Length: 243
Image (tube, rainbow, N blue to C red; front, side, top):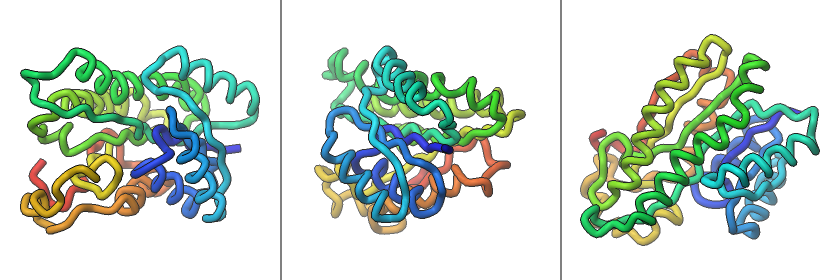
């Protein structure tokens, strides 16, 4: 059984990626969620309706012990399963001006994006190297390449993942494992629901927010066999915002 793991797969971009992979690949999709089990089950239902197969798996990516426990239990229960694809999509925002930012708002955002990338990817990387195949896609953000005021914590977290992507890509390329980052701009989802779309559209040359399906299309390409010579890249999908 060949599998694709999508962290933060229950809602928004993560859910769209799960559904796209159900349509365009044969992978058994592991839909990770932290607390919203109902949303994860809805995504699984959508995956099945699209003709795919999968299961939900709950853990907090920023908790190293929880990640190891959950993934070890899953691997023990599925000894034949091989995770060929990891989409590190889990992330949170706690926006605010840096001068008023609490330590908790700083560390929780860093832990989810950066340590989450480490905890999940590190669990599987030796197996991928032995199998001589893998596709790792790290979801970052325009904030991580351009920087966004009011998001110093999120920009730091995503910028660090961009740098990690470049380094890891060079370590594992000989074994036919690619590591790329996808940096969305303003995408219509739960995470951007509170934003003033009319105001922000003025900054976007394409004159609209992106759709989660458009991001999922890009991820689907990067996890496919077609993308084998693309690695260490950060691909912006932002409607032309400078980055």
